[in-house]
Image 1: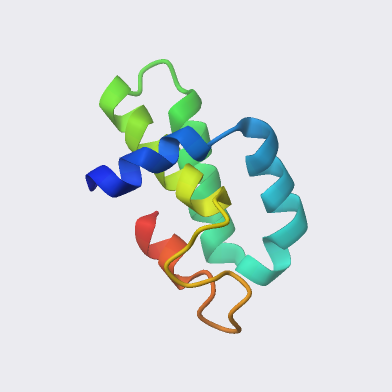
Image 2: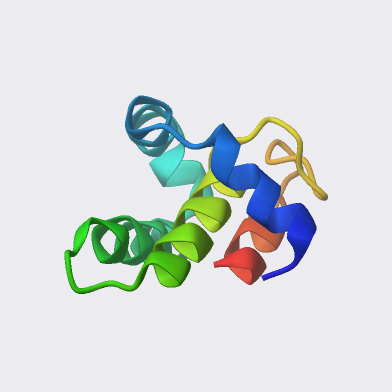
Length: 86
C-alpha cells in the first residue's frame, strides 16, 4: 500500500462505511461490495496483524472518501479504482 493510500485510513469510520454500502451497493456492484466486506471483516478479527488492519482501513477509507481517482458517479468505471485498491 502506498503512503498516499495509507492516509485514507484517517477517512474511515464504521458509520460512513455502512452508509456508503447501503446507499451505493447496487451502483457499485457485487464484486466491489464483496471485497469491501472482506476487508471490513478482516479488520475486525483479533488475529489480523496491525499492519494488515492499517491496509484494510486505508482501502476502506479510500472507498468512502469523496476524493477518488475516478469519481464514483462516472458510469461503468466509477468504482473501478475502488476495486483496484481493494
